[in-house]
Length: 326
Image (tube, rainbow, N blue to C red):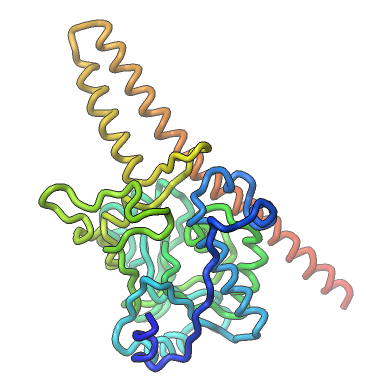
């Protein structure tokens, strides 16, 4: 990363990330939603708090805007000049501009977003209307990823007030359509996350992921939508951590559902009544498992949005009070 920054001619500095596994009980209580303490891996919590630390630096040091690049990002040639050009085209009241993204982040909308991304958007909720602002800027429908983005002073202050505590994946909460954030993205992207490498959000190399299937290298199979995200990276993404230690990733979730549906369906067509009953019970269990995981994910997102809504009401009340005083 340092070599890339130097070659791009950028003035940069390294910001120490937050190691979620080293947080004390007091820090977890102060910085993390209680449910998230028990239901998220520490890597996800650390990632969220690392970006909050970046927003704090932008606010404290009075930068009009700043760019954050994560360690596993690859910037395109001409990155420095492209950033300046894009920033000059943004509307005056912008908060965040994604220089690279995952998920549903293509100016041509759903038809250009690949197969998986629209399904994940429905699963997670919180989409916005995709629209082009110019030939090179657009409002993304359901973006993910925090590997490369610019944030304004106003945007950093707003994010700090709206997201006081870590509650889920920072990108899926911060870029959620429910937040009153002036969010834009560039096209084409000028930075990409190296998703051929294992996820850093979980301990170990590729915990819960599927990196290869015999002859098929999943790190080289892309999801689509112009994001360069590999299927291996998708499968290794953590969803929830069951109290007690079991980590449920996208890969483990899909594997459990696939095996359960296959076995349950096979038993269900048996001529033996007891076997058929076992199949029905297994299919019911699989359905309950899928609903429980979905509900857990949506609940954690809801906690963040509820806190953001409360913060927004406080901001509006303060603005009204100040206006009345004047």
